[in-house]
Every structure is written in C-alpha cells, then in structure tokens.
Picture 1: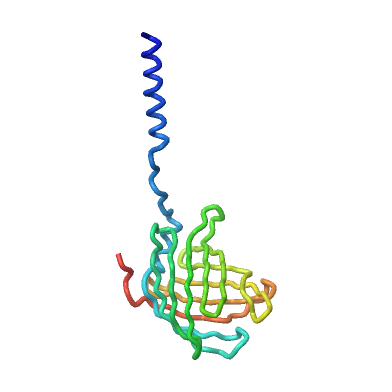
Picture 2 (picture 1 turned 90 degrees about the vertical axis):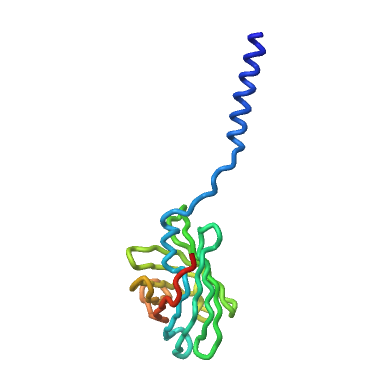
Amino acid sequence: MKRVAGLVAMCVLLLGVSMKAQAPEAPPKPGPEVKRLAYFVGTWKTVGKMTGMGGPDETVTSTDKTEWLPGGFFIVTHSDGMMGSTPSKEMDVQGYDPKEKAYTYHSFNNVGESVAAKGTVNGDTWLWTTDDIMMGTTPVKARVTIREVSKTQFTFKLETSPDGKAWTTGYESTSTKVMPAAK
C-alpha cells in the first residue's frame, strides 16, 4: 500500500510539474529603449532642402504618419511627399535590437531604394549610420542626426562620405507634429 501511495504522490507531483511547464508564458514586453521611439508616433509635416546629392538642389516636403506596430516593439512610418516635382513615397520600420544594443531602421521607397541603418540616442539627439547608400553607382557611408527641438518639432540632417572621414551635408529638414498620437 505504501508503494501505491508513493506512486500516486509521484504521479501527482509530475503532473503538476508538467502542467506548469505547459502553462503559457506572458508575451514579452517592450523595454525602455523601445518605448523611447514613442516620441515619433503621430503625424508630422516635413519641409527640407536636398543639396549635393548628385542632382539639382530640391525642396522636399512630406506628411509622415507614424504608428506602433501591434505588439509595441516597432514603429512604422508612411511618408507621402514631393522631392522637387517628383512624388515620393516611403515606408520605414524602426525598432531596437537588444543583442546589438542599437536601434534599427529599415526603409523602402517608390523608386526601388532600400536602406538599413543602426542608431543610438543620447538625450535629445539620435544618430543613425549606414554603409548602405548609393550615390549613382558609388556606395557611400551616411549618417543622420535627428535633434528633438521640442515635443512637437525635430530637425533632420543627412550627411554622406566616401570614406567616413570627410562629410558633406546632402539634406536638412524640420518636422513639425500636426496631430497628437492616437491613444
């Protein structure tokens, strides 16, 4: 009888461990680095000037709508604008890679270009870098500096370099928030 009671107790214990092992875990939650991207959520009007990018200087305007991807780990921006007289459409996704301890940026536009960049933030200044830009048929390095001027305005500066030493400004803009983020 003791043997049967011992077997029953062991079965109950194993069943409890098995049920705990099969219990669904809570979904992961975004960390503070991801939440820092909330600054960009909302609708922004952007006005800027492109210079020295292999073509004529052009005024650039866009409306940029940014929202959280369900789950809260990434923001997605849809931009609709004009580069001079040429329509411009772009979609980008930003997130945070905890393994690399870096922000991630992936963009795709209506002329077949795509860019991947890594970024950091220090106070009110974001710095993005990539070796993934083409100037005609020549690959160049690029860096973007975004400065949060206020809760409703930021500046953007794109610089390029063939060697990562001498940098040339190719684009500067100011974005102003026009609608609060939906809650």
